[in-house]
Image 1: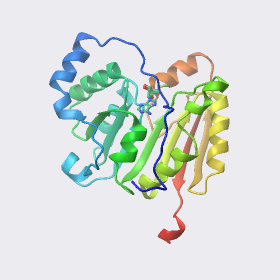
Image 2: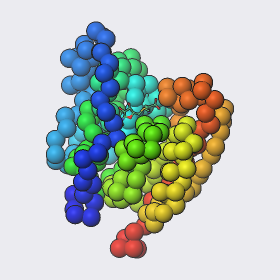
Image 3: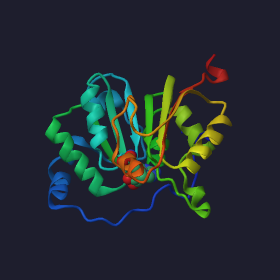
Amino acid sequence: MNDTTAHKRTIRSFVRRAGRMTHSQQRAFETLWPTYGVEYLAEQVDFASLFGRSAPVVLEIGFGNGETLVEQAVANPDKDFLGIEVHEPGIGHCMLKADESGVTNLRLVNHDAIEVLNHMVPRKSLARLNLYFPDPWPKKRHHKRRIVAPPFLELVADRLAAGGTLNIATDWANYAEHIDEVLSGSDRFSCSLRREHGGDEPLDRPQTKFERRGLRKGHRIVDWCFTLRSAPHDL
Ligand SMILES: C[S@@+](CC[C@H](N)C(=O)[O-])C[C@H]1O[C@@H](n2cnc3c(N)ncnc32)[C@H](O)[C@@H]1O
């Protein structure tokens, strides 16, 4: 980490939701965490030794119950997937699905993604960062909790490899406006794709649980792909 990329905050993008783990999710922490879990430590991870090979790394922030993260890992055996989530029942669920599918290219961290990005993820190490249906924090007084903000973009830009992408989806119209505004003000990313849809279009990601919930409420979905621009000192 260096001073320009340090993302100092006290306001977090989540509150830990109450929610009991089922017996099988608890068992998953006992039996499957050693396979899939990565303990949070304030030191850099070496992805090649973590995954036992060198392959493009896709990071997903806030994978929820992880079903779509596992689907992506199954569908892309040539890539390695690192999922970050703070909701423990979701992590337990994800490990059970991972075990059922037998994926070997998936690891999970149970911690605040901002701290993981700041301390564990090396610079220029990610091929792609997925942020699917981040908490929308719809009330104005909570907008400061939204993860998509200029310091987050600086941090992500620093961790993406050349040509890497930031892929975002939301079903909240007001958050979509905010994302358009914040990203158009960033000189680190250019928008390569913006699609507004009703959940009925082929995408390069599976549909998620929160997306289905939004669609049931009649929300429209916006999907973006933002590509990292080369920084002046990289040219
Ligand atoms: C609205 S849910 C979406 C879950 C999933 N992506 C989906 O579409 O079904 C947002 C998730 O992001 C997680 N989250 C929010 N901020 C986070 C952070 N800073 N680090 C890790 N997880 C975070 C929350 O715990 C929650 O499970």
